[in-house]
Length: 190
Ligand code: B4P
Image (cartoon, rainbow, N blue to C red; front, top):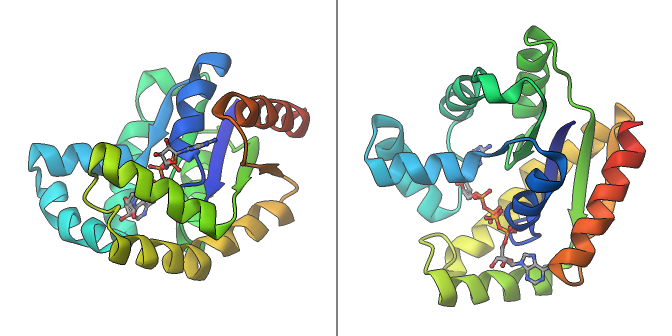
């Protein structure tokens, strides 16, 4: 299955993808994780991305697409994938479709995790305490939520118009949400 996970920061994309990749036996591709790895390794991409990510803004479409193209070109992706954190705007959604058309591997389903803003802020504050991620500070979180509603929310309609969208309530235990995601994804991808 080729699944795109959509949702605001803190909605549980990364958390769910970790469980889903075992259930679906496909790799989890997170553009956030790939970017954080580039930052940690101090690559040219990481050097460009670091400050942008800390502010909670989007890294340039061109840089992220190049990174994703390289990842989707690897052999382990031929049986499907879970894409987490991409697309984050309409330009990225169009670029992804063009790339996957070329690879003859169109998206089967886009799952949107729905969680209210107060809970998103609570979860990210919890992670800030537990993990100290550079972009979980209050200013950056505010910015990420704004970027999500301005730029990423329209991507939900993009997949709805293609008949590929499944909306899932993202509140509850991690396992409960995973069950919902799996049944929605399997139902939608039929
Ligand atoms: P991401 O890494 O994608 O960060 P995120 O949106 O916060 O989601 P994440 O997956 O990490 O968190 P989750 O909701 O699972 O992006 C970070 C930055 O990278 C972006 O701001 C941007 O700068 C850059 N970037 C990434 N992709 C890009 C792109 N395509 N284009 C441009 N720039 C890009 O979890 C959050 C917390 O909630 C965790 O602590 C978790 O334990 C908790 N949680 C999850 N589910 C829960 C549940 N059911 N109950 C209770 N807690 C839960």
